[in-house]
Amino acid sequence: MTLRLALLAMTVLAVAAPRRFDAHVQVEAFQTPSGNIACLADDVDEDGRWELRCDVGERDWRGGSAGRDCDLDSGDALGMRATGRPFWVCHGDTILRSGPVLGYGSTWRKGPFTCVVARTGVTCRNRAQHGFTVSRAAYRLF
Image (cartoon, rainbow, N blue to C red; front, side, top):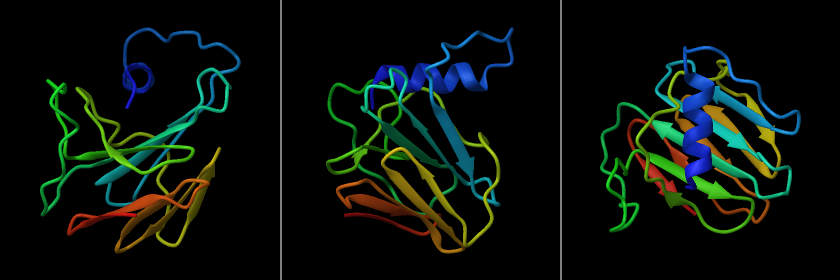
């Protein structure tokens, strides 16, 4: 995931003095009723390069690596762009507990992404129908 998403998430979650955002910034987030999964989508430049990130707090699985160049955390956050397959996010922050709580059975749409919140986990897809399902028990990439 790009550095801009990580910085944007930190800014949104910061408790310091509020920062003025450009009127074109589009950010939206949600969390599950348990608070264990949260997702955030953005299109900072309104250029169609949407990105989605979902973090999982407590989990019974070990996620993949974000790559050798990652000196931060990985394996607990998945990312995705408007098209293409999901990937493990290299991050030094969290988006857990951000955004409104969506009830089980809810569908969330932002930009090219659709996520469905269920008791069994969260499933997100992009416009190319690639995506992932994450829960405390397991994950699946498709």
